[in-house]
Image (cartoon, rainbow over all chains, first blue to last red; front, top):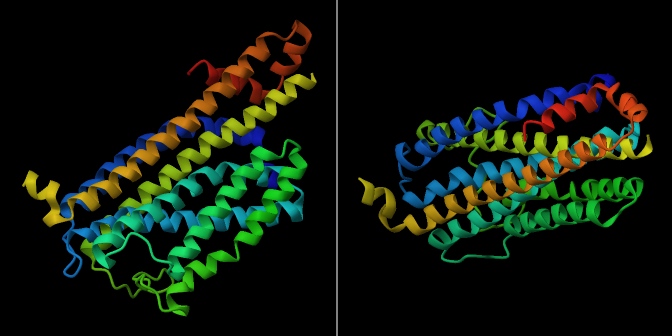
Length: 236
Length: 75
């Protein structure tokens, strides 16, 4: 099955997909921003401050999703000794890192008008900060180790250890008393505490953020493949 | 209408700064990754064109190398 995902076969596809994904991202983001900032109603409790949700929540979801993918790919890399897994993981990490920072910063901005403080050592916020640190360590390890084999081992270990933090982030609001509100949306259930007038902009913004993550992944993946091919030219 | 949109009942500073921070982060990340990609493409093209005839023929026999070269001409 893995032969279909060989870099040589998917490079033509990934290099052509970039411009289409960029185009789609701009359209979806424009619609999402219009919905989020103009068309969606203000919250009955938090007023217009609740609009921060439209950037904070998708950023947090995608940063968690990307890190979970890093962990899965790292396990795959260990089990199947497939270097393409670690190449995919390496290419996913930059967008995940930026999204985790966006989630933390926009959460902090949202905290000031709603909780009266920029920062609290709350379980959700602290575990999210730990995620940012894990992302930082992951990216740093790729830069520090010049030996590719060693870099793959170290980064995989970081991703697998860091994955322990993912359920902690998810359930922190249920396990501990936190300032952070509990989840309003459960993907495993049809019950949601958000009205459709807010759920639609949130979904559109999530789609836009996912497209941006895909765009960055494709560009980074192509960069990594060309790096590999550059080394191949040296060996000719 | 414009005033309402900018001020957002007193929450404008918070809402706009959160959205601007997000969009700025997107822009910076996009251009950093694009720069890395075009640098690597240029490095590949330079290396490829410095190969002698025999090595260039071997390199050209790999489809992916041709794809990289064609994408390099677009930058």
